[in-house]
Length: 306
Ligand code: CP
Image 1 (cartoon, rainbow, N blue to C red):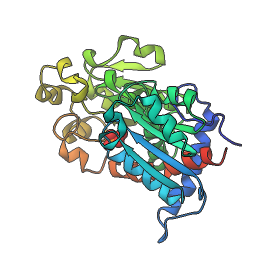
Image 2 (image 1 turned 90 degrees about the vertical axis):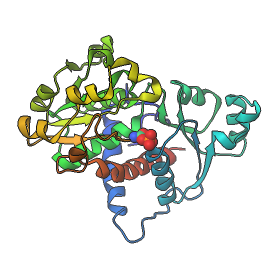
Image 3 (image 1 turned 120 degrees about the vertical axis):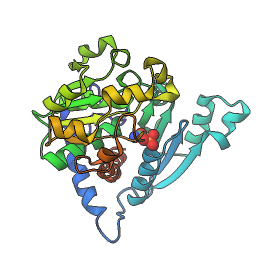
């Protein structure tokens, strides 16, 4: 069965069957990553452009590696060296790239809705690598993959997303994907970092980190997005750490069986202590490895639809 859409713009509204297909397909690609030769000819002859208008370490490298592992031809676009600096509009830039005959575009942009806009002006398959505060679907898929890999299931698990929910596209995609896959989802953070409308997405709200740790199977911890002015929502980073920081002491006191995820980049000593970031509860670097496999699955499933 193919995916129901030739684009991956978000997980809100995506059928459960599509999420399941991506997660199942990623298992095969995860196994390929353990082989001495980590490359298959699956997307040979396909051309993929990575359009990154916003900083990225994990997502950009992960997509590029996934494309190379699938033998696709890849081109990287960076804003600093492009003609957008000479006054060319975003639309004209994309139309020129499109004229070079490409099959897929992976896009990260600071403005919500840019991937959706690209579907209107391009014939390529569009994959959202993070758009403003809207969605980051491949991050949520790799988070779900990592939960399933570690615990064996998603259905029925209690998952709490902790931190700066108001600025987080990772939270929105995780909420949509996890609920679709049968998890019970909550969020935890200061009231100033939790949008009032969040409960309409089907989540419950905690303001007590100890309770959130005690009552959940998984915590997905988010950083404070200082580049989006999130610092104005809390008195200080030190105070945030004192009230909401996930520390070894809190985990050992409240729930020794909990699984800790973090999408990165981590801010040690703020949302997570170094002991937790490097310790036995977390799977942070496993998430990064799994991200390559999950992105290979997405690229393969979309790339073979055309
Ligand atoms: N998790 C995540 O999106 O990281 P990057 O911003 O480094 O891509």
